[in-house]
Length: 316
Image 1 (cartoon, rainbow, N blue to C red):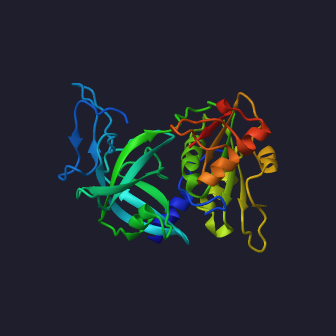
Image 2: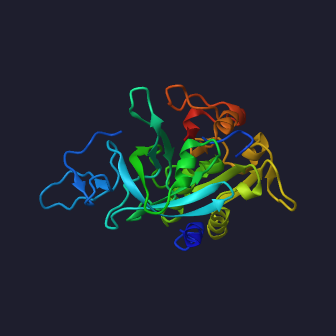
Image 3: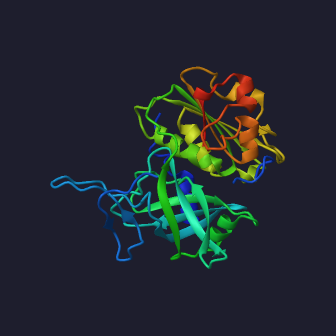
């Protein structure tokens, strides 16, 4: 299990080019034909149209069907976070674009009619979207968190139901000259998905600046990997801030502030994009939450004070 965490901590570095104070973090129509990759019809389903004489890419996800994926191994990532690796047919990809996520669900009893009730949560895999046969999730495990507790109870060989992908922001190389990122806790996962995608492409010259907020230095997830990426890629800059600094801490202290944004992120402009992901309190403070209909909504908070507009900000 320790090897899984070690692999994820350093993954992607070699191929690269020269709970917060804000609170706990929290479809696409079916194809015309289907292909089941395992004898169990619920395991790792691939859904692609087929044309005679043309080899179609196969994917494990299905946006319209809950599919069971088997837990291969898990490892402790921090005092309250765990890494989970799920496996499927090694000849196919998961089926995620950058940036997108998947949905997971777990049973939590029955309703008054005796039907199963589920808790459903979105997660962004940490693994390379091009990887075949597996995907990795980083999940915070809170005492009161139903989904986190469900994941923590899993043993290798157990399965989790998954659906997707859910596309968030369609990233294309060099779409902006400079991308700024503000993340809190496990909100680092969509940011890391984009960071990895940019850094592994030698033709992508995008500059990346990340502000990453956590409760304490011990809560900073995947810090070794982030530091290694920043050390080997001059177009990636990272600034950490924590609520409860330890002795010798050399990063920021407290909330993401206006000063941190001005000094650490690209200035407002047409070639700037700011991405934000974290618990609701962080979102409200930094950018404003999404609208009630889950559209992006207005920009408020620190980002509005600095001068960013709706077309410069994307909220995960």
